[in-house]
Image (cartoon, rainbow, N blue to C red; front, top):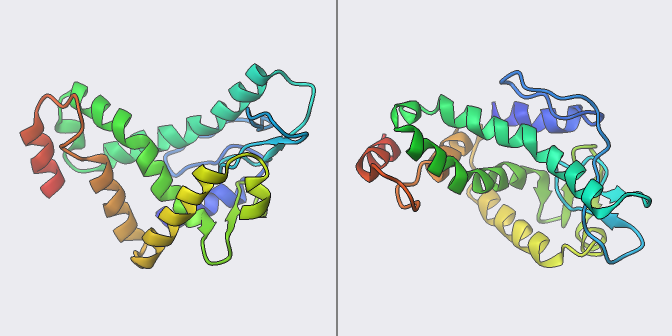
Length: 191
């Protein structure tokens, strides 16, 4: 499933990704909120067009970029629901786990789009960008951290099923703040 979903990121370059869970959205130009250079851009694998044109306000650009994450976040929610026992947790604990773990799960998923050895990342459009060109967009430290994480995760040599289990462990972590029934979350994490 994980490899299929990764392929979906690249196959659906003209629209939002169509996930196995049936969620899809229409076309929209994706862009970025960052300023500072003549070409604004965002270094995120969900962004099909990492360079955005002029003429848009920062608010418009930011809203367009945020729309890129909607399907990915919904996919994490659906993934969580598919974890045996997750839905048996109280709703508050489900929400707290999702709030705390969604970004981390997305980073695990995005790590497969990074090529640490080549210092390149593949965007939703299927285009590959070098670390140097992405740094010019003002995302150096974040990208460096993402590349480092990708390299470490890649060194584990996890297959798709192991990656899914890893994401489940990341998501279902009993040490998250705001968990009301820590014992139930710990039991779920151990199963």
